[in-house]
Amino acid sequence: MTRIVPPKPRSRDDRFDFLRYLRAFRHDILSANPERLYRAKMAEFRIPFLHTFLVNEPPLWRHVLTEHPRDFPKSPRMAAGLEPLLGQGVFLTNGAQWERQRRIIDPAFEGGRLRDTFPAMLAAARASVARLTPLADGQAVEVEAQMSHATADVIFRTLFSMPIEDQTAMAVFHEFRTFQGTQPLLNLAAFLPLPRWMPRFHRRATLRSARRIRALTRDMVETRRRSIADGTAPDDLATKIMTTADPQTGETFGDDEMIDQVAVFFLAGHETSASALAWALYVLALDPETQAHLADEATRVLGGEPDQPIDFSAVTRLKQARDVFREALRLYPPVPMLVREAACPATFRGRSVPKGAQAVVSPWYLGRHQALWDDADAFCPARWSTPQGKAAARDGFLPFSAGPRVCTGAGFAMIEGPLILALLARAFVFEGLPKHPPEPVAQLTVRSRNGIWLKITRRPDVPSEFVA
Image 1 (cartoon, rainbow, N blue to C red):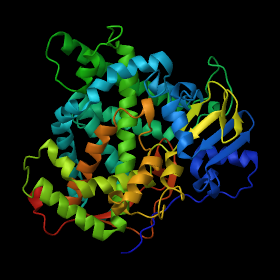
Image 2 (cartoon, rainbow, N blue to C red):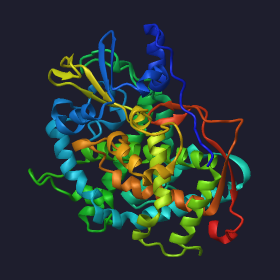
Image 3 (cartoon, one colour):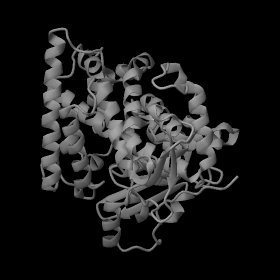
């Protein structure tokens, strides 16, 4: 079997002056860091105003994320760049406020509710196949944008029962694209210990885009609030969340707080899934044999007739699609760094961790850590069926975080991703363009600096009406 090694960022030399490091770090964390982090159990970094511990050793990251999470709340430094859009959404909050938000949100993403959202998810996946069909003539297609469109459609349909073609949905989607293009991964405030009242040095375009998104979201929330009141609201995720009361206080989300949460769902829900799917298509394009196996599985499990009914339970039988999606998440985790702040002094591997230091758990470095994974940089979905691969996953697979702050949408993503991947592989053949390899960088998520360009053609054994 041919060994497939997709690209990763070039690591810097160990010697790097502070100003060069600051510029590189702000634009791409991954290429700003040294190669030794793929082997290290822990690394300590000191730059002015910032003391950081990167913890790769499984007992250490478990200490931070699962065993003592209250001692390591989410770092406010990482929130600085996203507050204009997310406000006090669940992605940024800590303590009692975060706990209350999760008590209200989590029931909407339980197993039974995911079954209820499946028809909307399936409709969005089929719409994605239809959008790609006119482009599947052998031309080069930028699939990051296509997957962003597809996963935004999933969010709009499951959250507000509207396809992305709806005028408001399309406006929100385009504004999110604008926001992503203007907002670096880290705001300057991430490096400086600024008090909360000081300006955060956001670009005007970033603030303008965030205001537009929140205004459009307010219209959707207020419209839904009225339909809930008059008994005409659809039974979707928005209705479920807006009508769920905190079991401890009996309170529900007000409109302002719901706007914050919707912004989180759009950013975290569609952007992270789009990143994972785009990279999954890319690694599939490098491996025609695996791609053919996935297409065969999809036809066998999902059927080969146009508009054939697909049951929710079918997704559990998409083993190849699930393994490919997990392998893409391992190699290209959408959120490369989970940043926590020590609320009290601690000790890591005999070193003192002062209060206020940053404790970083990196899904990127854990997913490629040479002490955890066999042939860590290679694309090998078969590893997920081996005892060694399953053991490595327990210690080094954290695309959705872990512990109390594990992503509430993890189950949602693990249905959405394999389903869309299977439907696309069933309909199309994806081929890489050797002259245009992607360059992974950590922006809001792990994306390609130059896009992900693939040649797409219809599968010769698929009827034209099946993909139209």
